Image (cartoon, rainbow, N blue to C red):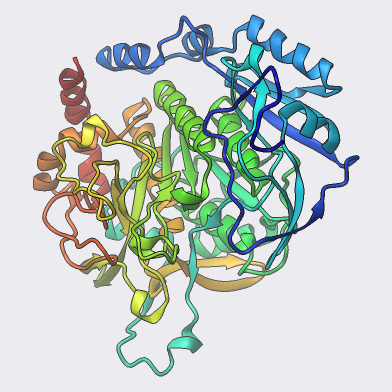
Length: 548
């Protein structure tokens, strides 16, 4: 049943799931178990988002939400077709959770009804972290909605992504004579990178995507009050949003998702304390991840201008439908003037996959994400003395991700960047990352979480670092940067020569070495915030002219 579609059904493209390597089936799912799924629909057949976005960019602006909705909202006839499908299979529609602007409709029903509706078998699996509901093979949908439905998420609720942070454990380095360490507050890192000091992010909204496991994860208001008081910085306005049942539920352990949430809030909030920080809590599965992102992008109440994502996983562990739909969501963000910053991974060029091949982290590998790699940042007297690629692979303590995508082709903006062919099979692909920042736990960030002062590194810190900088730049310019990648790449030589981007030329992440210009370790380099701000208006204009 899972592999042969019944009569009148078609395979849902790119929906194939394989068994998680460390999981084993322990029996069928209870047929009466309640299951919720998010069904994503095609764009209207008359729409052309790329053309609209490029036209707006040539006019030095972004699409208004009305322009986007008029062009991209789900077709009412498509919605009705899916409603008919739901009624036929005894599935109910959660109208409150559904969002026609995001082309998402949420269905609920028993596991038996879902298995029947999508012609798949649901099994319970056991893995080292617990159990999950899973499936293998493709999903199937009735032929009459085959061209309408482009993704179904939630039948399989396996943990999808990992937070890209690394905690500094000084006791583990007591006997390492070479382990010279320091740590910084986010304000000290911002000063080393010369971030603008006459703005605080006022008028901007930074969205943070946080994925909790079954035990949850979150922040404590008291921790944040203590932290920002210690920095002598006003406590930012912080709002929690619940997606698919996720919520702010701190566990009390800094090594849990609590640590990631605190790192994201405290880094972004310290740099742009005038910004509104909105934290979207969702379950850690592909449905929760995608729904959180689309909810943030289409949140008309909070209107995020930048999104920071510190979770990811190797491309090989994702379904094609999940990567395609998330990439499409990032395209929507680009059209609306929202910048999306994604951590590039913490396990070097292999991204933690033990198959002797190179892998890149998704969602950083989306061509519409600003992939954020990591460095080791050394300083003296408030000046950078050395900055090299973060690589502690020899001691099994992490390294920046980066490489060439196996899923996404080489984007136009990287045509002249010198992205190498894949070391796996010599194909051309999207190069990761685009930019970088301090990520080595030995030169990490001071964080207060669950009543403890700890130090975290990882590319998890680089995404909110860049998000905070972008919020400052947005405020100063009086308009949002939006899709930053073409601007950076089409002006990379000038930005490096002016010092707006600091080229990191020393070190490697395994299969890839740093060098002059773009590389698969630190991208185009690390920022000089003030110089980048000064260079952007001219760079934006040059990019718009090139796009014509």
